[in-house]
Image (tube, rainbow, N blue to C red; front, side, top):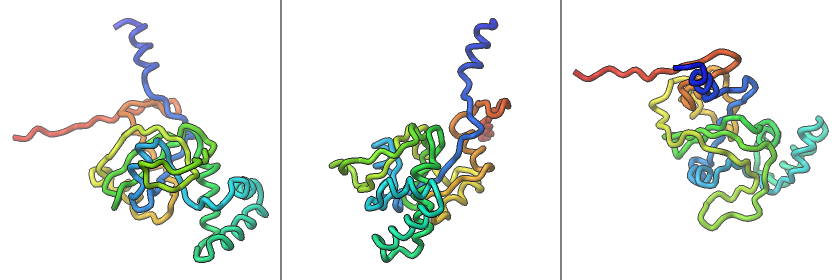
Length: 203
């Protein structure tokens, strides 16, 4: 193997940005799991809330208060309007291009892992005929790993299924595990990481 071959191998190794964030995004009890995968997007509800109001909430405290009041008015049965406001800001502005999203199927039996393709929300103009998801606020996503059986993963990772939030930011311990699922060999913060799948032969 010559130097050119070695350089080619090094260039082919996946490089993970240390600033990349990881998010667990629910799919309405798994109802829209297949729609997310087929349509290459993630989505959130509250279509009656304007993007301009979410933008204002991301900019200043008064905007957050205003958005919470709008949610109270438009969704009078919503018990946690301030929490919903925070989730909408997370979806619109904190989930960014290059971030990793994990979505669960019904009962969180399976998960799929994707990469957000662009930061801005795209507002779907109408629901497609072959999909059930009515949510218009969406983000384009490239799916990297599909239908992974959750029970086969690390026990720390399984804790995510018990989060009741629509959007949950994933902690660093679980994010490292996700990196290994996406690629067995990668470079992050100038360190190379290699994951080996070692299995014993049956006798």
